Amino acid sequence: MEKYKKRSWAEPYKIKVVEPIKMTTRTEREKALMEAGYNTFLLKSEDVYIDLLTDSGTNAMSDNQWAGMMLGDEAYAGSKNYYHLEENVQKYYGYKYLVPTHQGRGAENIISKILIKPGMFVPGNMYFTTTRLHQELAGGTFVDVIIDEAHDPVNLHPFKGNVDIDKFDALVKKVGADKIPYITIGVTVNMAGGQPVSMANLREVRSYCEKHGVRVVFDATRAVENAYFIKVREKGYEKKSIAEILHEMCSYSDACTMSGKKDCLVNIGGFLALNERDVFEEARNMVVVYEGLHTYGGLAGRDMEAMARGIEESVQWDHIRARIGQVEYVGEKLSALGIPIVVPVGGHAVFLDAKAFLPHLKQIEFPAQTLAAELYLESGIRSMERGIVSAGRSKETGDHYYPKLELVRLTFPRRVYTQAHCDVTVEAVDEVFDRRKSIKGLKMVYEPKYLRFFQARFEKL
Ligand SMILES: *Cc1c(COP(=O)(O)O)cnc(C)c1O
Image (tube, rainbow, N blue to C red; front, side, top):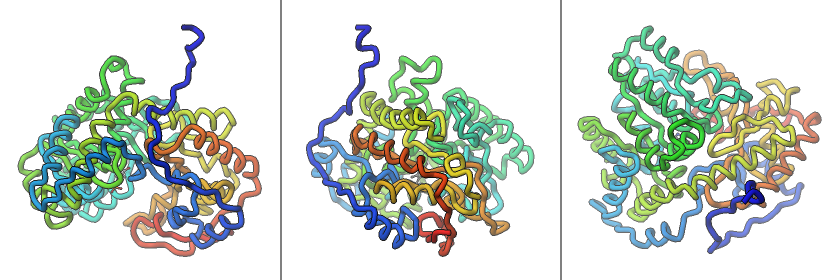
């Protein structure tokens, strides 16, 4: 047995349908990049070799999910797929009521409109782009209450997504609990690098909130990935199943918003799930205005069926171990080459530390945007900026937010790429690293008003 101690695991699936991808020439990529204004969001997917832009909606569905697609009950009202989805949300996430939405931000819009009144404050463990925007559009002010360790890319804290109760308490004391409709807890925290929150922290936040009458709303987009980290890192959870851990996590919240495009293993879909009857009634009413009838919420019956089945598959140990194992594999290889990344590696992505990678660039020369562009130029691999461009501008002062972290995200779609794709990715990053000193920054030449990172354009300095 000794001999097999370090035996590798392989992807727990075999490939039934293939989608060809093609390598472009450097000249083609130079042209594509210029046309895209050095913004990887504006590249054509056809011009991309390995697409690590996002894990959102890029999942490969199983044969079981595809079979479910054919069983779509495309009724306007009361589709049987809605009831299947409701059953699985109740079973695996544990909430009483379900409101389907076309994707995560649809759920964020509804919950923000219902619970936030102008002048209120919404604390959260680091912001997420669409979540914060909906909170602000509803008249709220977001307040970051994540632990300091989350802002330090080399701090090895196992649960860097944890809420700092002292920061939260300071806000409650300052503005009063009646001005705080809820705290948003991202499990895991996307913008911190896919970092998890511990069960102990969730329990502590819950008891604090009960005392002060503040609701807890999860951004449950990657809650299954969070459950994986609790299982492998938190004492007392080693023997629990992912499903049991997920259920316990959600029991410490009142509601969740969900982007099914991540954990639920589908290409489109989301939901709002809640326990309070009156808030549910209002949400069910509002979904009709913004998404569609409350039994489809902007989704086809087949989409709801795929999501219902995806939820079941997402909590299987073989799946989640291989999914996060792939991300950890790339992280370990990059670290071994001395390439600066956020550690510990999170659940859905490896984040390159662009400030450390390109220390000669000022933050206003967009180091992460630059690095993402250079990686594409080098290899045809598409990544995403998560730095000053994503952070946007302050509502009050109009100035850029200057986030501490300037990151490039290599995000792994679930069940899409093999270990060989991972190896090619590591080699490409290493090649850019070798010529890092000669890399020049960018200047922004077009800036949209909302969520600027999606459409901003740049030129080389
Ligand atoms: C993707 C995402 C959202 C928004 O969901 P969409 O489905 O893209 O609308 C919200 N929160 C987190 C953490 C996400 O990753």
